[in-house]
Length: 336
Ligand code: KG4
Ligand code: ZN
Image (cartoon, rainbow, N blue to C red; front, side, top):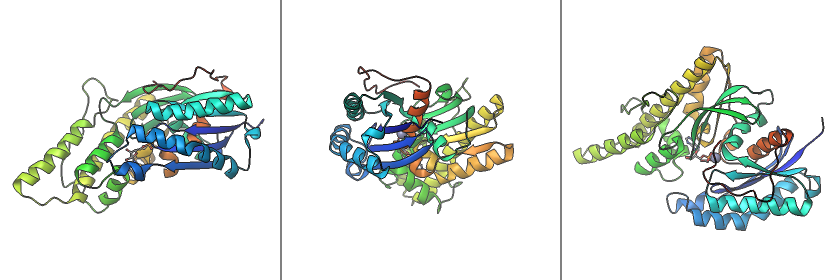
């Protein structure tokens, strides 16, 4: 098989990332420069600061990705870059950089959908995984239940009507004083808490078995905190975190299992930052085992934002004959 080496760039939010990926499945390098410490000061990502940091970091991150992979730009066959969804100023940095290199080296430019990237992270560590399968993408900005019908071909079964799962983790973490980013902190502290201490809602959407809603859950947690404060009751943050997390887990698992039953598919994958949550992984492992369904997930470093996943998605576009011209633009609300 001919070897296709793609240099991938990801800058949609607060990570500047670059990677070299061979044939969509093998990562030769994976460089991620995180801005988390900077944004922690403000309790969340500040878009203007993110864009400026991407500009400062991007050349160094690309050089490191090439040198870690023992190659130069002359060895690269095409460039894959995230062009949406995400923060427009942040996306533009990656898109402009990718265009400049493609123009200079006369190689194809491939724009990648960020969510498609998250899904494709599964191909890198699960070499045997092939479509079709059901995939749940849970990140800071997205909660999508998708049927991956083929490479590059997706059918969205459901998505969140309001907050994304990761957003709910981050907001609840802030409310109980854990700071940003909240997901990993809630994951950790929940291990010491009682998941049945509080009965938080498992929201269902009328007439839509696959859609999600997490804003009611977030409000229920905030109301509980206020109520306890008014009554002068001591709150155990670990109990609140564990009960909240249990509600998210139950909601995600129930929708995904309906999707598996309805489609009859025997392969299920999770993707996105929240997919690194240990309780979510454990619950899906157990439920999939019960049903004889093969369960796939990327390792945590490929769940949160990275460029390896973009390199994988770009390869399958390239193979499908999809490349982009110089008018490729950043699209903050790009649809899958
Ligand atoms: O995929 P990602 O890096 O960025 C987006 O595309 O949004 O996801 C970031 C999100 C954040 O909301 C973060 O709190 C959440 O993933 N996250 C977690 C965990 N690790 C990251 N949520 C729950 N448990 C975790 N272990
Ligand atoms: Zn992401």
